[in-house]
Length: 297
Image (tube, rainbow, N blue to C red; front, side, top):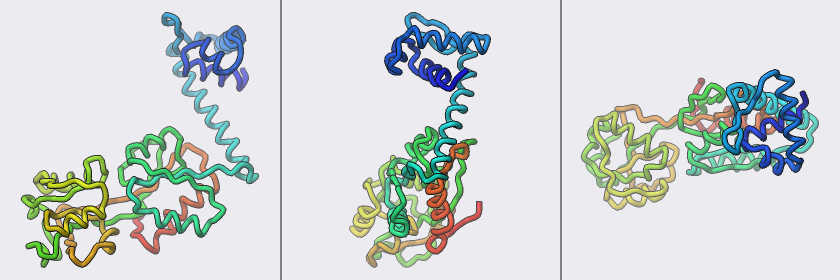
């Protein structure tokens, strides 16, 4: 049984066609068929069943493919590890961030401190980040969405309060703290529903016993500030954004429910992590400590 046989088996399983696989691999179909037959003879069981003009994995084939995937992936990670140690063909470290730019300055500082670093920063929705992480398309991702995956490690590195922003002329403006239920009948300026922070703040309102009346939806936090200043409504704002706001706004701490956003750095536990990726990982987990609240897991 050779490595080439395993690779050809995987491709046939993906394409479910001998002819299509032979074309994709640039070999003739009889040669491919013989290699698959030899593999089955070596194992002592058939791996495919024919369905019309196509073939598909039988129960033996499905079970075997799981192990073949692991073997091929392990060999690929081994190649990367050896090349990494030898400083050959350094690959870009792919790190994903949320669509908003909360960590853009920190990533920029890292690149300035490490001019030889080869990074590819991907901005994607948190749902897409998790999808890419599972598929192996990312080395690291920054997310506030809880990830419950057995093969994913997620470590909290930054927590911040979500506050309530009101115009300086609002009846709440003299308050330093508030129970969120007191704002149940207030009009809110909110981010679009697809934004994870909007999903989070809707949940906070639900915990307080009401659904927020969203009078206007916007794309970014800067627009929230502008609309709140007009007096049209109030809004949820992350603590890290407050220093950017003008004096025309007042921010109030929410006592109940507890409104906290928890950022995590996540990576695949079963993937080889290059030295460059580990360096960025440690920078995020420890290098941010001078700026952000770091919590032990």
